[in-house]
Image 1 (cartoon, rainbow, N blue to C red):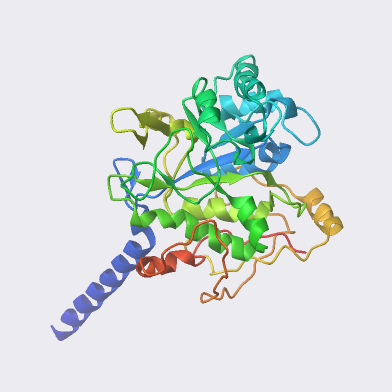
Image 2 (image 1 turned 30 degrees about the vertical axis):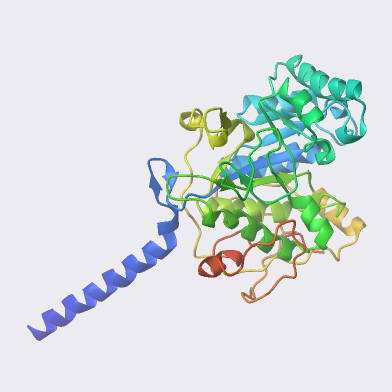
Amino acid sequence: MQRIVGILVSLFIVIAIGGNIFSNVYGSSQLSNGIANQQKVVFLTFDDGYKSQYSNAKPILDKYGFKATFSIVCNYVGRDNRMTWEEIKSLQQEGHDIASHTMNHYDLSKLPPQEIEYEVSQSKQCLLDQGINPKSFTYPFNGGSDEPSVISTVANYYDLARTGTGPLAHLSCNDDCATNKYSIMGWSHDAEKKNNAYNDQQMLQRFIKVVNSQSKYNTHDEFNAVPILIWHKIDNTLEEYSTSIGLFEAEMRYLYENGFIVLTMADLVYDDASKYLKISNENDSMRPPIPNNQNFAARITDVEDNNTSSAEEESDIASEKDVEAEGEDATIEENYNTINNWKEETELTSKSQLDFDDNEEQKDKTEDRIPWGILQFIDEP
């Protein structure tokens, strides 16, 4: 009898421990009516129509089932290292969102009224000529996004417009913020990396902090503030406004493994009655299911500093790169390196566009660290 009791107690302990592990690992990704319990959302956007967005970013987006908004400068299409119309239309056909980014990427705040009209209106017409009806507009250099005359012109042709000066876009506001559907806040990932001289490890940790900064504003069933993320080039050239392929994949994997809802600018709508922005549910049935957390047994890892490489070495590495787009267990080429022993207590000196309240975030401070299961690969120097 004593032996039977001992066996039962042991089984109870095993079940309890197992249940606790399962809850800790998978609990944050459980879905309720198609919405992740932690209620975290991100919007993915790409500016300027670089070819690498199609050749390098798109396979990674496909791998995780994510869609994004691509802001196109009409007179850049097909030139040098930019996407062609065929590639842009392919993105749209696959469910990505296409936005207008003017005809020539001029700073609208420095143009006379007639040239502003041309840049704004003709960029919409050129997309319409390609069978694309853009819902939103993106200000080059953020120029004119705070000027009533420019905003008025944009409002004649588009439903929404995005700028890029802070980590969070407030959808609904109290007295401490403002909502304007023609000055929606975006966060320039590449500008922050450049301005702070972050290496890839530091940038990944900053990315994690930004995407989790929405927590103190949102409730289980209401979104009041969301991060709209902006990238430019996705390659290993080490140029300004360039994100390495390995860093971008690590960021997408973090979103995937932590159950973030990933949306495009087309999923934002403006409620005229409340004067607030909100997330539309119109496209929910057309979107792939939000994936559950996976691969949490991976080792805690660091992302190698990619900034000490020479341009020639990076070029050699890039030529060998083949980002696998099929399957969650895709093989990564040998030029990706697994790096161990992540130092969880690393502190970053940030000159961010927005200072987050560390006191309010103490309860979520583990979110600012690189967690279990993110992709452990980055280009070696």
